[in-house]
Length: 352
Image (cartoon, rainbow, N blue to C red):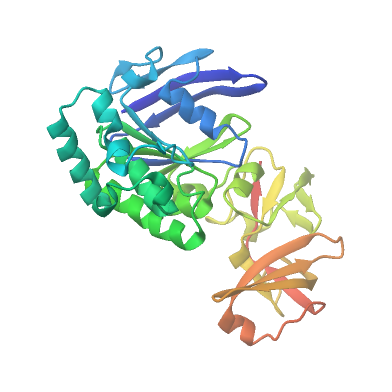
């Protein structure tokens, strides 16, 4: 469907490094990265708003690298919706159809159909100023989809909504994708959005694509410390290797230890620069030595929500390890800041 081959763009002092990307028909892909990583530049390059330094862009087997935006068959929804304030909801949705030369009757039929799909038929005569954030979002989506684009591009589409509305709209986007079968590239820095919606996730930082894979594969096998942090892992620490011993602020991990190298416990990269300690591999008040590391840590602080309790455990080096307990587990421990715990770690992942 959509293919980028070694595409590079330079805007002022920002460089989108040569990258390749493929989006399959009907796929919901996520471009995930922190603020300033190049996500919007990536999207605007696909749309045709930036000239290429190098590379080519293909859509449905046809090169579109030099086509103007209006000839590329893309629908786009920005995070601030960009609705026309002086036009009604009906006129906003039908604007592109009118520009494309559709008859009044066809415009009315298509707008009504899209308004029905998004449940906003009762809003057609209102102006954007009288809409809530969620309503504006639906109007923006309807305006983009009414033209039946080959690819729908969403730039941080939920960032202006509060948490409860973001959750509802994630479900709305999933329904849209399942029922309409539209091909989507969704740009976000929000992990919850990415993992809930994405069938494929591309990770970007500093204008570079770091990895592309299915969500479950990225989580199971982060390749570098930088990737692990983007994916939301907290216990990612610098490490160095000397004589088959990995040295960290926690102490030493020996590469010939069977607990670290057996089965699927570890995927050793050619170069080790970081260790990742999954939160679910951390055990408290241990007594046996059946762990790859044991030692004493102190409870620095505790954060609780309605589902779990998060512990910040501080080492004598003043570095911090985090883990999460269910409220049932926590109720049996009666933990307080300052408590000393004997901690065991079952699994360590070495990263480049």
